[in-house]
Amino acid sequence: MTIKAKYSNKEIKVSKKNIENYCKASQPTIVFSFKKLVQNKEYNFCYFDKYKSEINSLYRLQQRLTTLSQQTFEQVYCLPREKGFEIEDLSMIKDIKLYNELREKMAPDQKIYIIRFDDEKNSRLIGCRGRKCSRVFNILALDFGSQAYPH
Image (cartoon, rainbow, N blue to C red; front, side, top):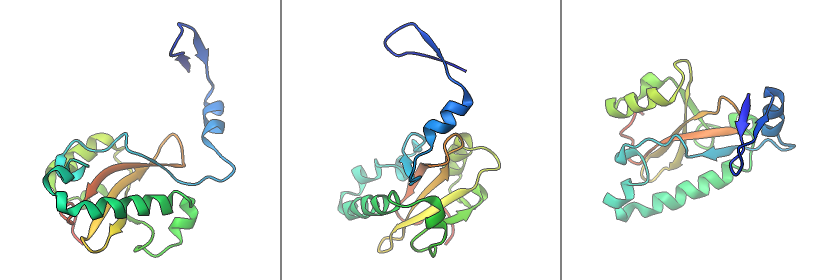
Protein backbone atom coordinates (compact mmCIF):
# COMPACT_ATOMS: atom_id res chain seq x y z
CA MET A 1 0.00 0.00 0.00
CA THR A 2 1.29 3.49 -0.75
CA ILE A 3 0.27 6.75 0.86
CA LYS A 4 0.85 10.16 -0.69
CA ALA A 5 2.34 12.65 1.75
CA LYS A 6 0.07 15.65 2.37
CA TYR A 7 2.57 18.45 1.71
CA SER A 8 4.75 16.81 -0.91
CA ASN A 9 4.36 14.60 -3.94
CA LYS A 10 6.39 11.78 -2.43
CA GLU A 11 4.77 8.40 -2.06
CA ILE A 12 5.54 6.43 1.06
CA LYS A 13 5.26 2.65 1.16
CA VAL A 14 3.42 1.39 4.22
CA SER A 15 2.99 -2.25 5.05
CA LYS A 16 -0.14 -3.66 6.66
CA LYS A 17 2.04 -4.81 9.56
CA ASN A 18 3.13 -1.21 10.24
CA ILE A 19 -0.48 -0.02 10.25
CA GLU A 20 -1.43 -2.74 12.75
CA ASN A 21 1.48 -1.77 15.00
CA TYR A 22 0.53 1.90 14.73
CA CYS A 23 -2.99 1.10 15.87
CA LYS A 24 -1.97 -0.72 19.02
CA ALA A 25 -1.08 0.99 22.28
CA SER A 26 0.22 -0.22 25.62
CA GLN A 27 -3.22 0.51 27.11
CA PRO A 28 -5.72 -0.28 24.32
CA THR A 29 -8.53 1.93 25.58
CA ILE A 30 -11.54 2.69 23.39
CA VAL A 31 -11.23 5.51 20.85
CA PHE A 32 -14.48 7.05 19.63
CA SER A 33 -14.88 8.23 16.04
CA PHE A 34 -17.68 10.39 14.64
CA LYS A 35 -16.53 9.94 11.04
CA LYS A 36 -19.45 7.63 10.17
CA LEU A 37 -22.17 9.58 12.00
CA VAL A 38 -25.38 9.54 9.94
CA GLN A 39 -26.69 12.60 8.09
CA ASN A 40 -30.26 12.05 9.33
CA LYS A 41 -30.88 15.09 11.59
CA GLU A 42 -33.01 13.11 14.02
CA TYR A 43 -30.00 10.91 14.81
CA ASN A 44 -27.05 13.34 14.91
CA PHE A 45 -26.19 16.55 16.77
CA CYS A 46 -28.62 18.59 14.64
CA TYR A 47 -31.27 17.09 16.91
CA PHE A 48 -30.41 19.87 19.39
CA ASP A 49 -31.28 22.57 16.85
CA LYS A 50 -34.87 21.38 17.15
CA TYR A 51 -34.88 20.31 20.82
CA LYS A 52 -32.71 22.85 22.65
CA SER A 53 -34.34 22.01 25.99
CA GLU A 54 -32.76 18.55 25.92
CA ILE A 55 -29.19 19.81 26.01
CA ASN A 56 -28.62 17.85 29.26
CA SER A 57 -28.57 14.71 27.13
CA LEU A 58 -25.51 16.07 25.36
CA TYR A 59 -23.79 16.55 28.73
CA ARG A 60 -24.67 12.96 29.73
CA LEU A 61 -23.33 11.70 26.39
CA GLN A 62 -20.05 13.50 27.01
CA GLN A 63 -19.82 12.00 30.51
CA ARG A 64 -20.49 8.51 29.17
CA LEU A 65 -17.93 8.78 26.36
CA THR A 66 -15.33 10.09 28.81
CA THR A 67 -15.90 7.15 31.15
CA LEU A 68 -15.84 4.52 28.40
CA SER A 69 -12.77 6.00 26.71
CA GLN A 70 -10.77 5.17 29.83
CA GLN A 71 -11.59 1.45 29.49
CA THR A 72 -10.80 -1.34 27.06
CA PHE A 73 -13.44 -3.22 25.08
CA GLU A 74 -12.72 -6.27 27.23
CA GLN A 75 -13.47 -4.31 30.41
CA VAL A 76 -16.69 -2.89 28.97
CA TYR A 77 -17.86 -6.34 27.77
CA CYS A 78 -17.82 -7.48 31.41
CA LEU A 79 -20.16 -4.70 32.53
CA PRO A 80 -23.96 -5.06 32.73
CA ARG A 81 -25.74 -3.61 29.68
CA GLU A 82 -26.79 -0.51 31.63
CA LYS A 83 -23.12 0.48 31.94
CA GLY A 84 -21.62 -1.35 28.97
CA PHE A 85 -22.90 -2.44 25.55
CA GLU A 86 -25.86 -4.21 24.09
CA ILE A 87 -24.90 -6.05 20.91
CA GLU A 88 -27.61 -6.45 18.26
CA ASP A 89 -28.10 -7.18 14.58
CA LEU A 90 -28.65 -4.23 12.28
CA SER A 91 -32.10 -5.66 11.54
CA MET A 92 -33.18 -4.43 15.01
CA ILE A 93 -33.33 -0.85 13.68
CA LYS A 94 -37.00 -0.02 13.10
CA ASP A 95 -36.57 3.44 11.51
CA ILE A 96 -36.27 2.51 7.83
CA LYS A 97 -34.41 5.69 6.78
CA LEU A 98 -31.87 5.17 9.55
CA TYR A 99 -31.59 1.47 8.73
CA ASN A 100 -30.81 2.21 5.06
CA GLU A 101 -28.18 4.81 5.95
CA LEU A 102 -26.50 2.48 8.48
CA ARG A 103 -26.52 -0.40 6.01
CA GLU A 104 -24.39 1.71 3.65
CA LYS A 105 -21.82 2.42 6.40
CA MET A 106 -21.41 -1.12 7.69
CA ALA A 107 -20.33 -4.53 6.48
CA PRO A 108 -23.28 -6.97 6.16
CA ASP A 109 -22.04 -9.21 8.96
CA GLN A 110 -21.20 -6.39 11.39
CA LYS A 111 -23.11 -6.08 14.65
CA ILE A 112 -24.30 -2.80 16.12
CA TYR A 113 -23.35 -1.84 19.64
CA ILE A 114 -25.80 0.15 21.71
CA ILE A 115 -24.64 2.28 24.63
CA ARG A 116 -27.08 3.84 27.06
CA PHE A 117 -26.16 7.39 28.00
CA ASP A 118 -29.25 9.15 29.35
CA ASP A 119 -31.68 6.93 31.24
CA GLU A 120 -33.92 9.89 32.00
CA LYS A 121 -34.65 10.38 28.28
CA ASN A 122 -33.99 6.74 27.33
CA SER A 123 -31.23 7.88 24.95
CA ARG A 124 -28.86 5.50 23.20
CA LEU A 125 -25.73 5.71 21.10
CA ILE A 126 -25.55 3.29 18.16
CA GLY A 127 -22.17 2.30 16.81
CA CYS A 128 -19.91 -0.46 15.57
CA ARG A 129 -16.35 -1.65 16.13
CA GLY A 130 -13.69 -0.43 13.73
CA ARG A 131 -12.54 -2.93 11.11
CA LYS A 132 -9.00 -1.59 10.64
CA CYS A 133 -8.22 -0.69 14.24
CA SER A 134 -9.65 -2.78 17.05
CA ARG A 135 -9.59 0.18 19.44
CA VAL A 136 -11.99 2.30 17.37
CA PHE A 137 -15.69 2.54 18.11
CA ASN A 138 -17.49 4.24 15.19
CA ILE A 139 -20.42 6.31 16.41
CA LEU A 140 -23.12 5.85 13.78
CA ALA A 141 -26.23 7.43 15.33
CA LEU A 142 -27.55 9.10 18.46
CA ASP A 143 -31.02 7.95 19.47
CA PHE A 144 -32.42 10.59 21.82
CA GLY A 145 -35.90 9.21 22.34
CA SER A 146 -35.69 5.45 21.74
CA GLN A 147 -37.16 5.76 18.29
CA ALA A 148 -34.52 3.78 16.43
CA TYR A 149 -35.13 0.27 17.74
CA PRO A 150 -37.53 -1.60 20.06
CA HIS A 151 -36.57 -1.74 23.74
